[in-house]
Image 1 (tube, helix red, strand yellow):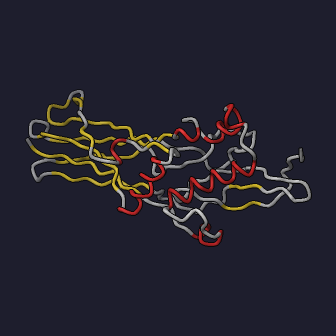
Image 2 (cartoon, rainbow, N blue to C red):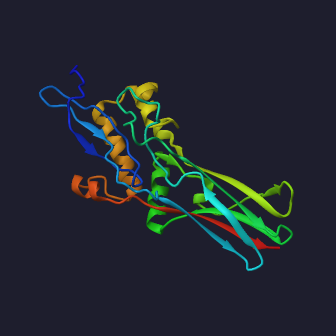
Length: 234
């Protein structure tokens, strides 16, 4: 069996704008090693924003997100193996949205929904159907949230809702960095199969053809999302 090396150049692979898998060492007899790694774009604002919708009788305040990016990448503590953390971009699949609503005696219903362009939604649903990822419930329809009382405040209520993407059955429900380096089935995958699977993940999420050329794939822009919080009066 050929010896895996890390003497190689880096190729950019981006999923969800900043979302990338890295460090898949590929080598065969007579060929140099390859590494698929992160060269992420600088998107300080992230790929997730937040918006609010209220009746005129209600007010939403202090609405905030725990993070502004969803990143499908290796875990920060994954520093060994075929698929690993690049030292910059780590897995980020959970966003918590929080805020307050007033006046509480007028509030009838509070919902949270993760919205996106129709093309993006179609691509993500395809990725879920293929078993690459599992979408949060609020990515398919609005989810009702139950607010809680604010201590010492008789007019406001507060809310917290967690949006969580998960890895699909193709990766055994775990991060690919763990699947390919620790899972019994993942360990059986050849380096070429690992590369092919991660490329398929990316092209599916982007809604691109599986045989898309590298230039088009590298130039593709990741999807963006909006967390919409809606409050309606009773």
